[in-house]
Image 1: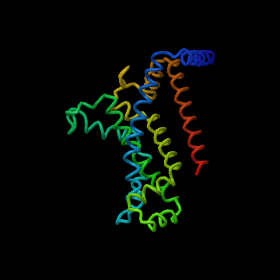
Image 2: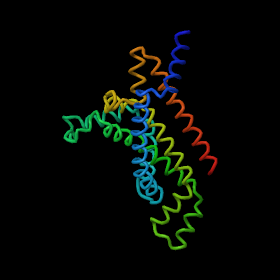
Image 3: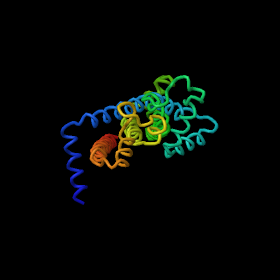
Image 4: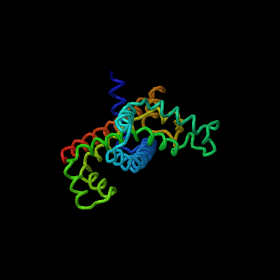
Length: 229
């Protein structure tokens, strides 16, 4: 028990002293996850808006499929992407395997269903009168969708924050696509896994504290935005 307490104290000391390895892993993790979240948001919000607005055959089935993908194991996404970008895969010539760019693509694919699905849910929650008013004022389809998205902006922002939380805490894509290369692709989850297996609990606990702090910030932001609805 004394060893664990000592490790926790040393971990806090690493954080306070801004240990270079700790900062490097934190910066890389934030860069990859924030970039993936931004890309996924730019793709998912328009797609979610169109799925919500238009009526078409199989719409309910498509939404059910998107919702099913919420809980897809990250290792499945990692394996799927690995097969595509490995040297034997169709996109092997891009040399994306074991790179931050490959990890960004993997995390983007991982959170896309979440952002699309929650965008649709957020838009459904907007009063139908808003849509009817925009149409009656002569708004185009594009303008109507934008108006509805603006009304649901806080719920959509909550979805984006949730997607970021999912991205930064995943491990399957990070290991299979990133390869856990020190100083290049090693992020929070892979570093914690590796250092724990090595018995380096101090660094693992320090990284765990930072990841837990990010989770707390994400939760506070989501509660704040949900209170704005």
